[in-house]
Length: 592
Image (cartoon, rainbow, N blue to C red; front, side, top):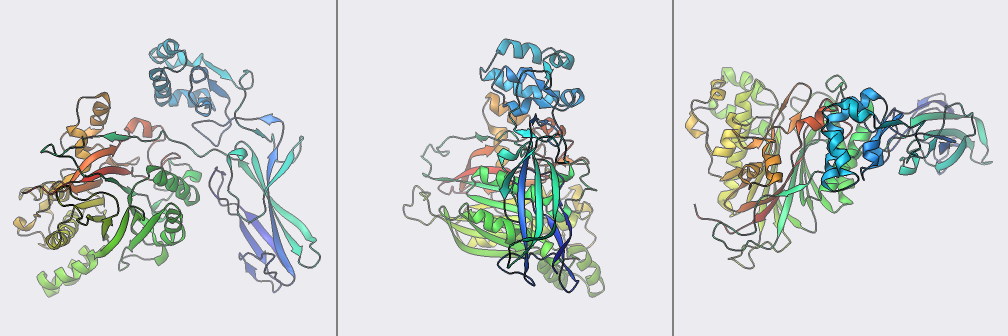
């Protein structure tokens, strides 16, 4: 007879919006084990599985710590209560928790004071005191204080004792916690049912979760305007603009707890990260989305169908697998999405650097060295180039009715620090391919992705300056001679880094804030990748400055706000990279 051997939940902490999928191991009538579902519509030997999810409610009130959401709060900041700071941000689990978070927490007070919320003079006095102990006097115990929790009641223990009420919330194997579940424990029940009598057979198997926590909600990143709406000659720009997002989302295959031990296990799990990443991506409302490190299976099963619901068409280029060892479904690649109501697909080009390596070794490398050369050059990296046609009013102002095409290149360059020659060769190969497209069509271009190269490196110089100084130290690493002569390391595309526009902004307070997050030497962000062991810029959006202009940019994050969670990824931000987003406008091509 069908029976349940074991039930458990892979995720330790249930989070609002993140689907819970229990692991249910069954024993079939022939004594073999399976994890396949046995629904009522397809009974096995006259039996099927029935599932129930319950919210466990009791009289005890509980609030959740805003810093450590898996812990119960014991303290509340009265400074937050004096303003319109969301009450959920005011709760802390201990005095140490509040003290450690103070440098970040005080920003909430400063924003509230700037917006004129609450008792401004009192907040400014508390914030400027220079002593955390002075603000601690405004923290009251939730158990002794009069303020009530915004969260619903929760159980005092998981034994089923103490006036608990079970509220049924689901009847399928999976369940996605809702806002009403925050602060409560969930109960999952699984039982074998006789298909004919509809009676339960044997005992039910149950699991109790820990308390449901709200999904962490970082402060939204704003779009910062960087230019006016006229070109260099004072002519009006075209009517339409569009936005492009570039984001390395950190593939699950690389998100190990050994590398990112500082990130809570629940926040590192793919079940949580995929929902948090999707939420972030959708909130940006970008017209074009370029993602890197998208696993093949996650593209097919999650990103393509989920973003389709939001009006995006998807194109994917998986990395090649000549070097990769393992399940090919987990190979990552580059995915480009575009809004169907804004663009239509014209053409796609796939760049496989492995194929380019084969051609290069055949043409330049002596036979005895071919194997060594291929071992160095073949790294499975790819680029995805998509030509799109705009559907909105974005025609060049001086040529009415002309089709407005756009070429978007999305790439992920090799990561190895030792292979400086391979990085530069990959970037050069991509640019030469784009030059051929530019020669065949008068078309604006965007080149974005994770280039795994810092500002002022040889690949960055090639992209931003169109050439590499023959004395550049990166050129010293060239054991195969593939970079010689150095005079060939050029291109004719007028590429400019979108985020360098922050360095050219006016003298506003916002402009100054963003400039502090830029490297003045390179006019690039101080970082786009932030882990415990590395912080620096690896990601870029380049555009052809003779056909496109930057209208606005997504604000950069400051390092201090991220360090409260040690580094990225964190409960708030689910990749070790930050997203880059730029708004562009097409303009009549300037003569060079």
